[in-house]
Image 1 (cartoon, one colour):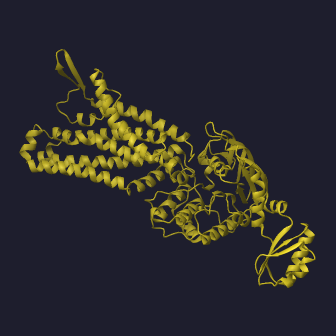
Image 2: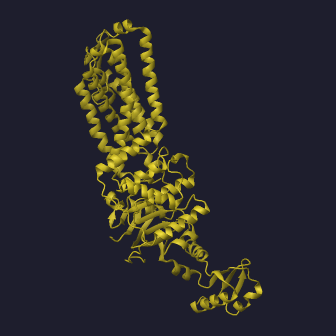
Image 3: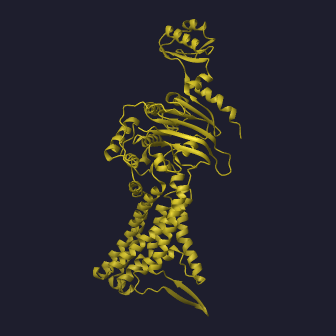
Length: 295
Length: 311
């Protein structure tokens, strides 16, 4: 062999391995299973699952301790009200799961050796992102689903299975899934932008929880509906179960002073979440595609 | 089989406003064989490999794998390429088989072929137990798993960045033997600081310094060009100094390195080299006649210091 030469290859006696063309769809499945296999063995998955289960179990246990009559009275004798209240923490679980599983999903390729393992394979980066996103969505759903499972068990125990609004509960879970996808889109975008995995997780939590909540409170004080806020849109998960739903509440603060409180309608919540997915997921793919392994 | 190749064409890379890491680097190799990519730390070796596989984008110029730019079509460019760059780290939660299985499936292998390939790599590289988690492996074991991942599916172009770093001497011998077998029908670009490794494995050399190619040539040409008038001879048995007397008539100096090893200086001509070899063989069985490792090291030192002044 010489530079620019075309010396014929000398066979080593080993038969070439037969290789089939792999479609992007197949690569997506491969990456999803690879990532899922990783997530399902991480401490963060079991930690968060345990934490959500523990909080849900403690809530349920305290309600059982209070007695069926007390819980029914407190929840206005409506299982939907019970579910709506029980699931009020779902937004936090979603944000934590999105941060844990999305906050470093892409930055890990540029801050550890993981990228030198995966990014040299013949897989397009958007497909890698899609596989990881799917895996992150599935584990987030497992976390959120656990909370819904406890809520359903409680509703059956206190109100009886026939009175549980299953279709509304399923609708709420559907909204939670969309909320998870939106939060993961933001987390992936942060992860594509930030180089340090721990910083990605932290920034995602701060942005989705502290940031949005603070901005929401400020704009509400100014009398503006926080239609741009993802945490505001998260209210739709409970709103669909709330039989006494009120979109706008005006609370008098004093003489000629009012505080207007908005609660997202289901449609509005869906639109905002879909908007986040449509903006942040392609942006993540663009940033990830452009990112260089300089480390 | 389609001929495989790697090529960089007027390739330059700089980061932000810093001095360029690579400047106008060009080379092309095709067919089969091994190319050693040599240079001091920071010369731009790893950067070149990263540009080839699309982990970096060129500031100017082009980098092709099998005629395709990875920065434009990663999937097609990397289809027949195995790359071991920096320190790859499969997820520590996965076991060895799972880590290799993902690579095999991504490269289009059937379930049976993956198992066969994993078994082959297990045998070739003396891999740790396949059920053991990556996070529990030693550095050397992880490096061997990463090398196995490079080989699964038998890609015909191999880009290896310091492939024996982190390995113990026995593992290095193992890898060198493996690469010597592979280069018969694979095209290998291997960056390394290990002169012995380069001598034993590579047919061609590229010397790089401060992002510029200083020299490209065959290994033996580089060796000849540098230290033409010196060879090391190693005998199978200890040789007393008196036995070396006939050599003194031909060599300008005969220096004992050990009881069995001697360094001979001469005029550098092929005719004298042949005469010396003949004389040595009359003294006793010769195990080795040229230490090209030393010669390459000297070539390296001769080339590099001239340009390692701060820029």
